[in-house]
Image (cartoon, rainbow, N blue to C red; front, side):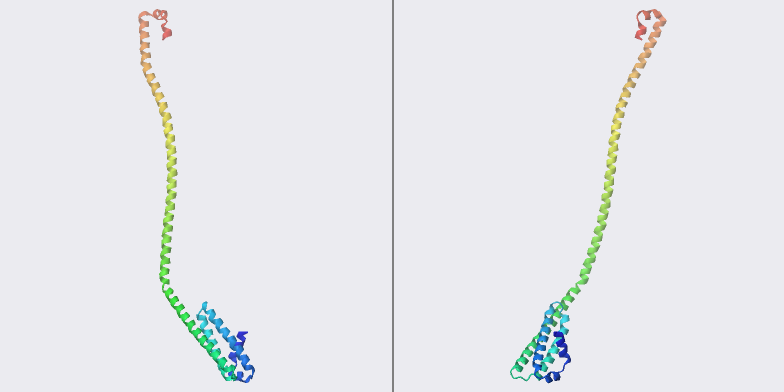
Length: 224
């Protein structure tokens, strides 16, 4: 509704407002109120984007100027006319100050943009350095994992070697015992063989000298 009234006011001329007669004051007041509400609505929207507010505010002020001029020409009521003109001047002044404030906000925003925009290369450099550090740490982590894998394999190999070494030691112990037994048997055999040979020689010599009677009488064959 406010937009349609505003467009009607923009397209209409002051002469048409004058020729409207008594309804001019009512239409002018309605249009004036709509435009004022619209201007303040745009001002409140400056929080989101100040740049987008300036152009509509200027259009609103221009429309307000046209309405104000139409009011001056059309409203001849000595009671309401001066009051409306004074009120319109106050609203026009407030709208102008709002435009100035919006411009200041735009300047501040541009200053902030330039301020932080100058720091963008620095931040990009820091981000690049951080990425490089992360890549290096990833590479070191990969090498560490590979080293841990090799160490695990070496530990497994050492454990297997120790197991085989223990088995070999046990086998050597068994073989050592058997070797000791064989050594004792060998020693016994080596010691018995000369004795048996000497006894055999003695028996042969005795048989040749005395004959078999001595041996048979003394039960020597059983001894042998």
